[in-house]
Amino acid sequence: MKWLAALWSIGCAACLMTSQAGTLGTMAPIRSQAESKAKTHSARSAYILHCAGCHGMDGRGVSQAQVPDLRAMADFLKVPGGREFLIKVPGVMGSALSDAEIAEVTNWMLIDGIGRSPPGRFQPYTEKEVQEARRSPLVDVMQSRQALINLMRDSSAEAALSK
Image (cartoon, rainbow, N blue to C red):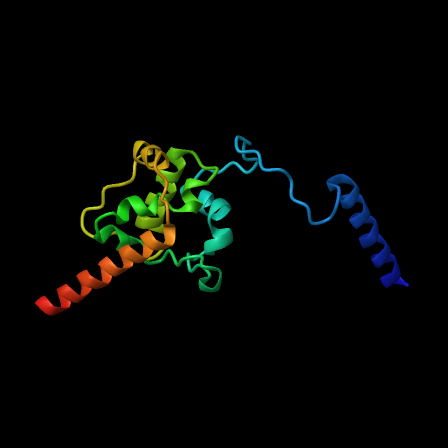
């Protein structure tokens, strides 16, 4: 009898949700200028709210869904064009974060948060740099990424040969 009462209450909750949202499974319209209801006070919190849903708490990503692993993102800083690439990927460009917040989160990921530390003397990203990057988005993300990965492989091979 308790299971019947539980089933009834679940059904009532579903009916209420359906009447409020229209049809179950529909998404609320996206409002590009909507203020976040989840205020964050740290770059880590912003990462959790805006990045971890796809990339995971540890930055591992999901290769089957073509969500890249962020743990080696510092490697992109070793090749020409890699720095710009990191802040021009769709997840960054389309983010609801401000330019300053994107710089802050990216710096946290590289310095304190996820994966390897940046090579040598790392120049932190700035709000202005992110603002400029948003003016010229990538045309073909996968092609750009692959070209940078090829550069990384070539420079690794050259370094190994020179030893």
